[in-house]
Length: 253
Image (cartoon, rainbow, N blue to C red):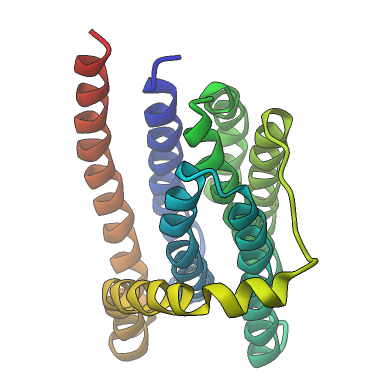
């Protein structure tokens, strides 16, 4: 199957995310929008660090035929993110909108794990179905952002993330492994720690600007800064996806 479904899936999601951000900036107060965006940034930060810790190792081990590593890494990845969520909810006292953001990002962590194995098997059918679901759900997200209905917007985001997981699960059996997990951690701890330190260093450096803007420049500046970040992500992704698409097109000639 041509890979353009993969590129379109990501492109549509980033474009809709930018439009939702632009609509929310004008439909709710700068303070409310800044707080929401900061919560998303914090949860996403931990998700990115956890993903980066395991994903490169999973790619390597799957190519070597080590399915056991995939199952144990999935268990540890989900446990690690849930542990981060617990402490964040405890620290912030379960305030709004922590729970729906935590759930949607947790589903994103799980679906990213599925994507790795699907790409390894060369099965890109899920991306076509996910693209269709994005087209169906995006008008709802945009409408709720236009009306300033933050709860309904986040609810649709949770549903969208759940749909992605269900679509992936249709094509892929995902296995958790709990037996022997302590032995696995003891055996792989040096490699996991090395990957964790690398991911923590890189993505902390990438996200520091967001944390500093929110903490020192104020919520109004942070609100428009987030809009600029979303636009930058969309443009950078478009350039990167076009390059990947050209490479794939030339390789299949």
